Length: 164
Image (tube, rainbow, N blue to C red; front, side, top):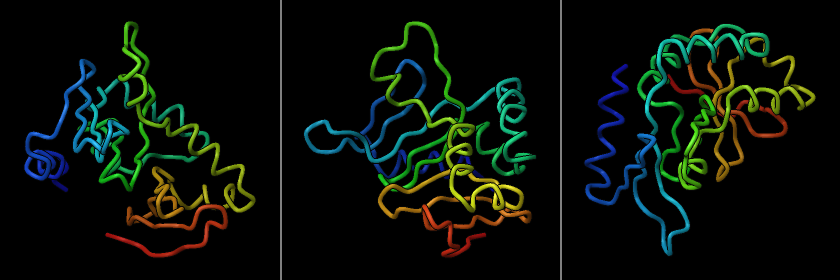
């Protein structure tokens, strides 16, 4: 999968409507009256950061899917089209501005722990690797064993659809 070209395509979609933060986060498509941004991508994780993240989440979700590892190497989580929030590693760096702190990704370990709190969550964590959510649709996303993306209804964790 060519994540890099997909990420770079945001430049052509939003053209000059973007802002680059010191942290390397790129914000695309400012919402009216400065209320936020349509899309956000962040600097990718280093090999060491990725290994630390995988080790931290392994006890909750098991082995990280290969395609998700590749994705996190390009962008540490993402927020796409004001619709889908993909988790990553919540990195804090000394001297971050408030804006930089607010644009950090949701930590995938915390996200997985929230899934565990759901009565069906612990059972599903054995078969799926949860990585993102849509606040607008009220859904969560996970990889299955074949690395297809499955969308579940948040709360009931009822399977809605799947994507390759």
